[in-house]
Amino acid sequence: MELQELISRGRILFSGAPKRLEVFKLVNGRRNAKEIAKKAGKPLVPTLNDLQKMRNMGLIRAKHDVEGKPIKKDNSIVYEKVPLLQHISIIYFSDYTKVQKHRKDSGLRKISRNKQIKSISIPSENEILDICKNGEDQLYEFKSVGTEVRKLVKEICAFANTKLGGLIFYGVEDDGTIVGTDKKKQQFDQPLQNCIKDNISPSLVVDLSQKDVLGHTILIIRIPSWNRKDVYHYEGRVYIRKGTNVFVAKPEESKKLHAGKYII
Image 1 (cartoon, rainbow, N blue to C red):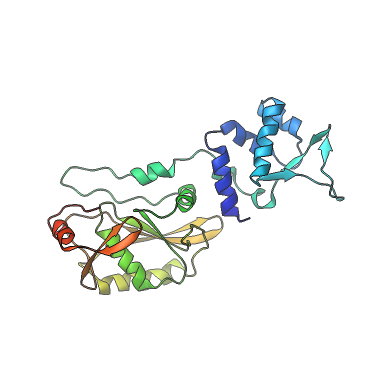
Image 2 (cartoon, helix red, strand yellow):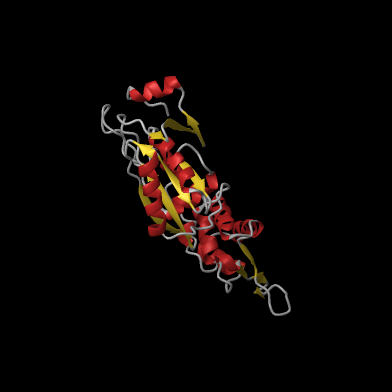
């Protein structure tokens, strides 16, 4: 099982359950269930139930001796985290700002009725994990390594004509699996910016950020929120993003954009 999947399972199991998370933190390959319950300040039976749920999720296991037998202390099983989780910071499972909130506002507050909305913020490592778990939507697009720059630029143009803009994660598969980038930020940035300059009009500026997530480096292209003035064209055509897809704007949609009105 991959680390990303284990962390997703842990987030589900520990969401809204800080005492269960505390039990997980106490699992270290030396303590038995009774010792864990005592340190966590929980009765033994609820602690055993928590430990069983963690075992079912594949997060922990009973520790075994050289003969393959479960190790017990005081007739109580000693537990350890599975190898992939033994050196992972507990912060990945701790309470964090829910990505739904990040999706809802992301610092996007209207300054006034006539002014531009602030661009979406770059998510934290924890938020990226949750975004990848929840999948693509109006704000987020995943791109695997090797995706052609021209395809990325077409997506960028479509995002640029939407109210909030968006983020493209390069180094993330369609199913949300984080695999990492195949290029350094500097190697990726120049051809991307050149392609934007050559194919999108009027001129558009995007930000490129680098993030390390679970030992993988990914690149994040941030497309600014629409300024309600410029209507962006890719190779002479107006594109718009609706949900997870890119479409050529219909005549009435293009007219609406030129009038400074949001479509999406």
